[in-house]
Amino acid sequence: MTAETAAPASGSILVVGGGISGITTALEAAEVGYEVYLIEKNPYLGGRVAQLNQYFPKLCPPTCGLEINFRRIKDNPRIKVLTLAEVQSIDGKPGDYTANIQISPRYVTEACTCCGACAEACQTEIPNEFNFGMNKIKGAYLPNDMAFPARYVLSSRIIGTEDAKRCKEACKYDAIDLDMAAKTVSLKVGAVVWATGWVPYDAHKIDNLGFGRHKNIITNMMLERMASTTGPTGGKILRPSDQKAPATIAFVQCAGSRDENHLPYCSYICCMASLKHVTYIREQYPDAKIAIFYIDLRAPGYKYERFYKKIKEDANVTFIKGKVAEVSEDAATGNITVVAENAVTGEKIHHTSEMVVLATGMQPTAAVSKLPVELNLTNDGFIVNDFAKGGMFATGCANKPADVVSCNQNATGMALKAIQTLKKR
Image 1 (tube, rainbow, N blue to C red):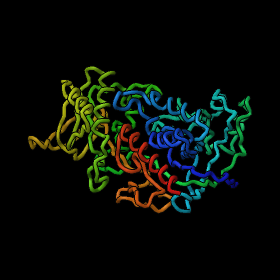
Image 2: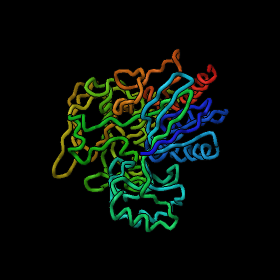
Image 3: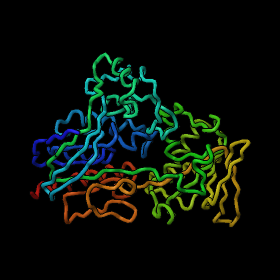
Image 4: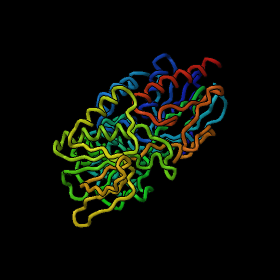
């Protein structure tokens, strides 16, 4: 491992996390004159938004907003982007921090033109994490179709193998460096904004809902990727067991959320995400029957309430107020039966569908990956902002469950808080 020291940058801001919150924070600060280091642990920017098929409020594809922001980043010399980068430590005080950042090797240099020759030459296949393991990609890969930076990556799994040599030989631009090593960069910054985002709650932990045991039970984010034309099924929503177009689908809301054994809080986005998913299904299968099992439905805002009302008017969509207690599978058909008690009528319901979608909750990344600094966290792993102390701030879903619009608004505010820290120096 090599070590590098960046020149001290007076008035610099470090943004940790390259999702929509981190991107917005970086742009807002840089476009009023501040130098920003934007670091991301993945080999690309965009975070969870990049994985969506569409997002509220206009049901736009992620390219709609991300492409513009990527162009703004590319055109702004004040923003330094470091991908495959993670904070190892931060020392100092507000206005004067030293951050040590470890950068993992990509094994592909900036000479890459995205021609894809390395992927064609590579024989090894690895699970596609961007699609939640629903398909496989080559060991030399472009992270996603709108990846920024637009550069291939060689998986560490093929380094030292014949496949790696084949990739290097296939690259006519000499963009593959198999000797690339991890390095540590030391940055001088005055403020730090944590935009570490969220991860879908692990549905395997919810024993009574059968995820992982029954093929035709998927999560909401898996459905999101299925519906995308860049996803594992090319945009077709299909039953995993037999690639059949499902005629009946059940949604299980609050899968892990509002549950003291899992996530005790409301994850805010799940209700609207499932209503959005109904529109995906309806576009492909106009006659499909859809059942939504819920505890309470949350439509935060006038536009969202109108959207909910429109879905309720669909005769093929049934809303059932009741928490799902258990699920079972018919071995012959692969169909799934969910059992719930109707909270309105008191009736015990056995509802069978060809596919079930679990609306899994939003868990802050800090709850599953320990932060390298001491910050105030809630019991659930959300970062609590200490505005009196200043210096370090959390934005977006690192701070609380939020949708894309709320994340953008909050990120703008945290960019201002970071700037105020610098102004006090």
